Image (cartoon, rainbow, N blue to C red; front, side, top):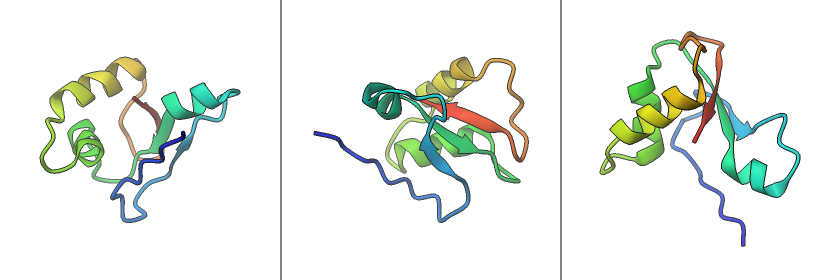
Length: 80
């Protein structure tokens, strides 16, 4: 069974399967997000975990998955 997570982005960014994903497992495991003006790792992680979640572990995961990628508008980040 495939579960699709709808994120409350309000159309602010593009979330979707990684372009290099060749298998169903890769598509489920890796998503991307295009950084928008005003975004921070904290704000992106907060959207992923929701208002009741703790964004700190997700910030660390995003940071680890994107070593060397600057969080600037237009950058594409891999999401956990």
